[in-house]
Length: 188
Image 1: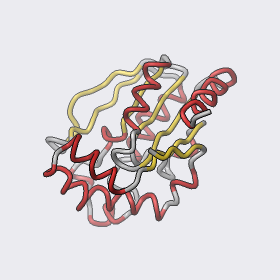
Image 2: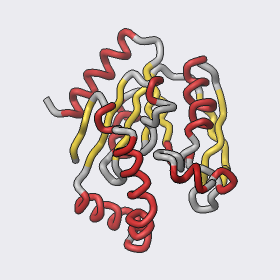
Image 3: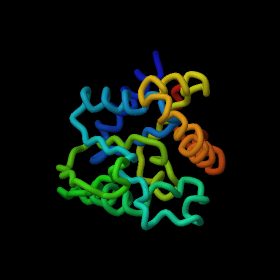
Image 4: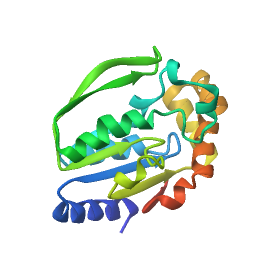
């Protein structure tokens, strides 16, 4: 049985016994988190949340905050707006962070569903991890990661990934020992 089939079985079992199921999918950039999350979204009737919608706006990007492992994501806003509302079974709205303009822009409306997938780097941040019923980490070797980022985002954007985002991610993974906190490890 493949790792992905094991995840489906785990989710199916959780859905049988839990009132509300929250699954975190964390891991390295270009490791397949978004693709797998989309697959889950097609297979199940679920809500899908992206950590990319919760990067810090400029007004919160202090030197101290950016030196914190996992500090470049607004985990406080994510916890309050998403996780706490899911647990209350509320309909709610949240604002997404637009990377192109570096600020919060449009709103998304959420209707309660039994299964909720939280996808993206920083989804297993210590401020969030205890909310999840299943934690998955997607890993990838550095050369494949580089190829996929260039294919997906182009060479100019790869330089930003290489110089800014990947070092921040690696600091988060290492200092907070994120891989070891996962229930399932997928190596793509």
